Image 1 (cartoon, rainbow, N blue to C red):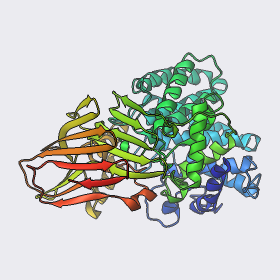
Image 2: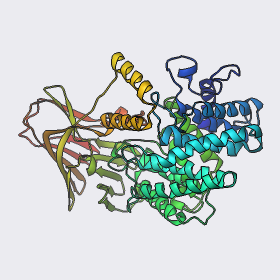
Image 3: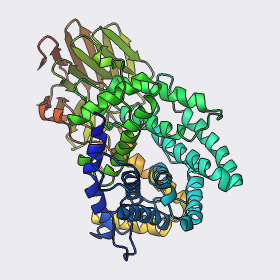
Image 4: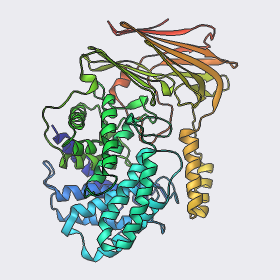
Length: 558
């Protein structure tokens, strides 16, 4: 069953190679950013594209079933080294890299995760890595590692902190013999950065993503920390604490694999549906629940329920391809695995007070409710292996044309957890829609070229962009109270709305994503059965009530 990792990854290798400039005489030789070197649609190389280097290194070094033609192929080796050299070439003087725009000087993604991929490629190539390149290579590594160790980005993304910790420690591992003084300084910074990361980890097992829980990125935390453990000798003072974070994250994330095979989704603060499998395969040797999640994820992959590389952008399919290849290389065949929460037949209720997530299991249904997001409800039929009811909140269109939603993580949201009755009150938040036009895009690019050389300015601009596109939302005067009642085989969702302004259109229920997140909104089959109600000029004096009957999966608006 684990061969699905290899199959899906190998299917993407021709696409990956097509993205790479394979012309030895080209000044951009080795670049995987086709939009830059071929179509000339970008004026700078997107560094994250160099993550493709790792996939080439892996198919060169490992004789993976179906990939025999790549194994120890001289061209694949040359293109891998070309990818590494291009990474060295496009680095800023401070060790940083750009992803979305020039002089971005990105932290964990374009610098951190990429440093891991390049160092891992070096490890995998082994004796095939050119000796005459090593000195220059490790000087480039040192610059990136120090940038990661001494800088930080705005906003709280725990997975980015884990993503940075991984290559910082990996660099320390490789440099402690080559440059002991630098390595010791790096280790001091690693310990400082680790304390910051741990402050974002909750005892319930989740780590903060902006303002809440995101299962997709929690699986990334498991993957990054598990990769990092491979470089630890066993004497590190943080070893047990890191393992504790991983074990709790595995336990918490197990609740978010669903009967239909999907994972995460709009219940999360960043609504991602990806599952980083490699960390769970690494943990499976000592953690049976991690093994159970990896196995279930494999079956879901065969059914197209977990995001495959095929449907992802050119920027992100590179992540998944390398992750799947590593998962295959480190996978094992497990037996006597425990059940995941949704696979259990007994009734249970589980409430995570810090995450504000309620989970209810019955012999036939698996139900999840995230109150922290204004009340996002999912009901799965376990026999049908199907999402039978989804309520991702209310969306109101005002007379002004602004769109407001309850699907936010509002600081003012108040939660009540009563017996068989949960409620959340707060305000609708405006859904941010920000787009460049030709003029603003040109002005922004010129500004970054002229000013972005200053790292502090680059950091500030990054924070402004993230705030505008992702985390900032104006709280409206439109208030709500949503009540979720679970009584025998009936679920009732009652919504009360108060507004001083006129609502011209109200959507109730269904699936939608309010927050902009680059790695989200990939198509899922359940969207074809999306059920919602649209009301023109709703009467706000009336209670809006949706009833879901668990006996026949029938839903109605009263």
